[in-house]
Length: 417
Image 1 (tube, rainbow, N blue to C red):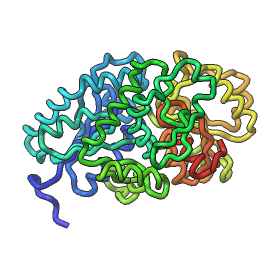
Image 2: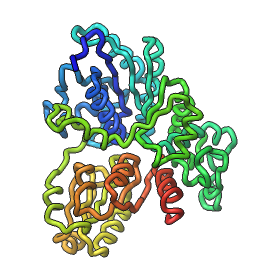
Image 3: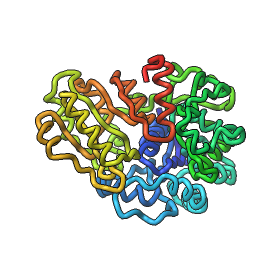
């Protein structure tokens, strides 16, 4: 096929919400669009741009002539540590401060020689300020909601939950059984309880940043030219059907990590990564030495934090399992403290554990030695685990992770919670 001439080459500006679990799937979308002939401009925040250079090397974001990286500020002062930024503060800041620098970036792209005109914007569903910029340019704007379709559908009903006073909660509702109240009017989500909805409904504060931010983002979804979600019909059939009736241009595009297999390994796209922490591939060599289906893989994702006591509890649970395990412990996993494990635990498990700060998760889940996955039930992890045929034990932390657990339990396991 003849290459597309520059003036006719479609140009997508892809902008993820600036957290690991959002950057990863957006980069996959960008790679797939590039593979299909698009010019790509991928926009990170300045803070995440620096983190990617630190984790992947100084040339990691050099890009290609037709796959370039740009940056905008997120409006927050840089934190002192290499960690995920405070999510409520980040949501508040991006919604208030990112539109102007994003506009400037689009103007700069228009003035840059050798770059085709921007023909569409693909933005994270939590970066809906981009809809205004797309409207000004008169180009399509696609929102990519990175949660499950179930999580997205729940966010779309946040406004009604607020209006009908299901949330914010009274303090007593946390312990009196109220969280088990069934919500029977969200289409496609039969038997869902308040406790199964994305966790921001559990606030007692009517001015809660996350509750109001997600309600607003859910409201704005209808203004997009199209909406895409990393799922597939067989996985979330009833919810997909419901969303398709609400949004005429709603498309499932998953599992993204399997679609990337269509891109040849020899492609320069293969060397582009998005991990904000440095991977430790030695864990794969350790897995090579283990028997088939013998290892428990433990990873709570990029945002989950826990107390020191909770970490010690998990540690002794793994020790008492008598199974070999691979445990990913981010430097910022323990809230307000360093991740320190008891020396007795280290001695007890030294011959059957491997601990790392980050890993190539898709390769780990596809490794023959991995038997089970102790997970936070983030959507990327859930889809990757299902695709790999690896059983999950879930410890959901926040956002729609509880909803993902509901989906797996209600739809597939019929209540084994």
